[in-house]
Length: 614
Image 1 (cartoon, one colour):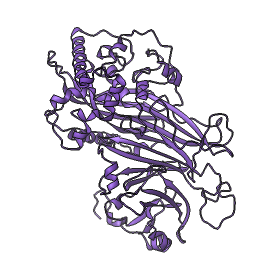
Image 2 (cartoon, helix red, strand yellow; image 1 turned 45 degrees about the horizontal axis):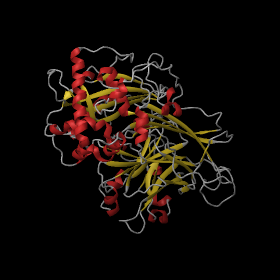
Image 3 (cartoon, rainbow, N blue to C red; image 1 turned 90 degrees about the vertical axis):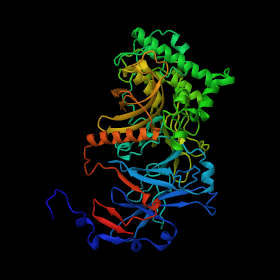
Image 4 (cartoon, one colour; image 1 turned 135 degrees about the vertical axis):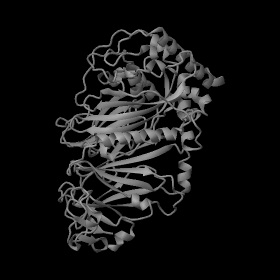
């Protein structure tokens, strides 16, 4: 062996036969014929996971159903099936999914399964359902793990079956959370190493918001511990505020909350500060330019109310912008060739639809009418605008305007109680929809009063990207006076610190801004920039870490811009990378090999040096 500082891979290509077990020797042939796809070992080494997918008799017009199975593994005996759950229950899945099964670093009580739809299928139904190639569905199931030993509550009666769950009423080993959302181009990167870095919390980038979701089992409501937003503070009473910003907010050029770039403040306070005459003129030109674009976009129906306009933009207005997903996903033209259409992109920030299956324009209006706090400001020193009546009714006065927090408890159905609604929790604010069921698919009951038994607690802390982008630009960007509007953005998680509950994100922006070199130039150009922000999961407050310079985009497609941006994010992550300890890694299993037309050679339990040979 050469002394090169590296081991030869040949040394570890095989293990001794005594720790290598052929799969056909430990699994009955009937299960293999039933289509079980084996994924790998769980982190504890106790179980081997497999899944099945069934699309019915007619492959072209049937929906897929998925089931996940737990098999207890012992080196010298056959696998015993001890648990199974249906994945993504209630969803109409019309294509074969890429599956990734993940486990948190130290949380062994539950497991999370991601499903991503693909566009390589020739299914007729898939082609009908996926007419919009700019949206992709993400499916999520979070399921409790089976008990390591038979549980009296799971199976109160003796049984010859090896299945340990589903026969009784056990909440600890018998809850399942299902959710689905859509992402748009540029599709967020899948980062399980960061998304699951904090135990019991999963971070989900929905293209429009970053959702920190926590699910935990509580002995009762009084003893439940809050995992997210545990240090939220109540801000001081709002000061008096003029109505001038309200008048200007009807123009789409007011991409910044509470008005235009005239309201730019420093990073420490949000009080008004005077601008120079040249900055004021630039702001006026920006408003006039965008207002003219807005009038032209309305066309002969200029008398429509603002709600109709927002619905029109939500249903397809994004396809008119120069950097719309249709251009980026289809025949790509350069940004310079699309310069004549860049003006319409000034409305692009309003075009982003809610990413959830139940879009609500009223929810978006309520969200943007809430008080705003500077990402770099503290609660105590930041004056706010008066909250609207909607904000007061929903209790949003205790949180920054760019976040929303909910906490719900669920319990097993009480005897004689009515069947809960099949739909998940819905709020006027945009929240990730979900449903919580038992192993038989029955919806758990939402706890609305006092409850003394076990409950499943679901917390969500949502960070609104567009709201945050506007605030960071208004408060901390040196080029804020030049800013007109942003047309698209891409958010990448750079780091998560589970000890301080801090998430570091990088926001790449494509935006319209006026040139700083030619004050008289009245037409904005397309630029790229980035914002680095840290988000505290304890308080919900964001702090600006850095704001990049404006880089003019010349002759580039949006695809090349985002490709370069993500490469720079990878370089940043690698510079910050700290090797994980052997006990804090995130265990991942995937069916990627199946989609590539191949198969895994072995299922390896590296911690215990055991292989199942396929």
